[in-house]
Length: 239
Image (tube, one colour):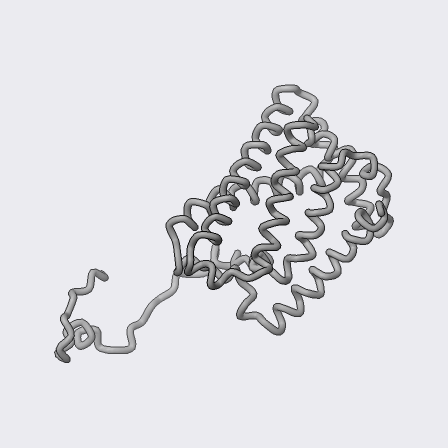
């Protein structure tokens, strides 16, 4: 079972994500997006989406830095004050993630318009994300100094997975909550091609340096603005 959970599932997840995302992009490129429902409801979405994304981005890059520079993280944590800073910050972003996620789930459940465009996969991915964030908070509270043992125990395992020489000895002895956190992370990776979260793979970074768009009207605006067909004319506020 350890081989299944910590070797089989990770490789299956990466293969499914790679093949699935390519297939979806080449065959259903129009749906290769977040399929935003902001047009249907924006107020609650705004309130939940911001802390959700802040938490996700901070936690993702926190894990990534630990994966890429484990020695630097361990050296940083050698000073108790710095260790507390990184631990408290990670917990704060996890709580922001949970807060935003709960609001987004409530929005999906209670708003009739949003319910219409909610798929079964949306529900499944919410379940996985809830498991992820709850186990992550549990670990942060119950098994302290996770940034240090993540760098010393988890990173060697993750690197062995990418090097196609899996070594699971360090993870099979970890507490149950940590194991659930690891497995659900890989399950989420495998689900990405079938969810709206696939959009982060094609994030429009080029917009940062793209020149400003020039909008050219191809009709006479004076005629459009002063319609004489019986419709009440409202003066445009556009400059």
